[in-house]
Amino acid sequence: MLPLVYRRFWLAGAWLVSLAIIIGSLLPGPLIATVSTWDKLQHGAAYGLLTFWLLGLLERSRYLWAAAITLGLGVAVEVAQGLLTATRFADPLDIAANATGVGLALLIAWLGLGGWAEQVERWLGVAAPRRQ
Image (cartoon, rainbow, N blue to C red; front, top):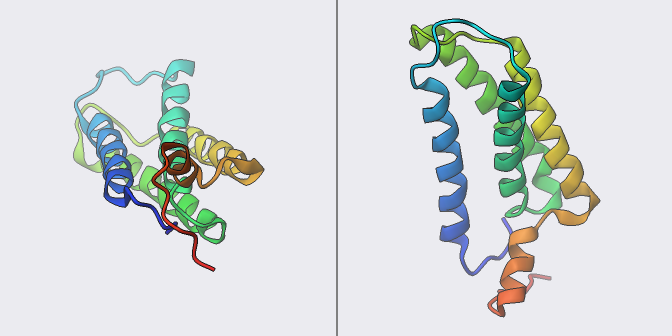
């Protein structure tokens, strides 16, 4: 993890986004299974946001690990929807949308926006000294 002054804050944000995704995915949903563009955009945005948040806290060498963990969460939530809820179902297209969001976040981070939390702390004038 990057040397962050507000590490607990940044980690709490990651946990809150994760919990929002899990709770939102397992709450009772519509009884009719629909495939909508809006639903897939929500999946992509949620998992993209979570991945991008995590990539803001980590060194570049851990990006793939974080992306794999986030995608694993998406698969686990889909399985849980199929097994634990009466009004939701596991949808492979949701997993594909999750993977698209994760992939876009990974690309954005690799293009230069990864480690953004450290940059925010620098802008705030509180950044921890970099390890050599």
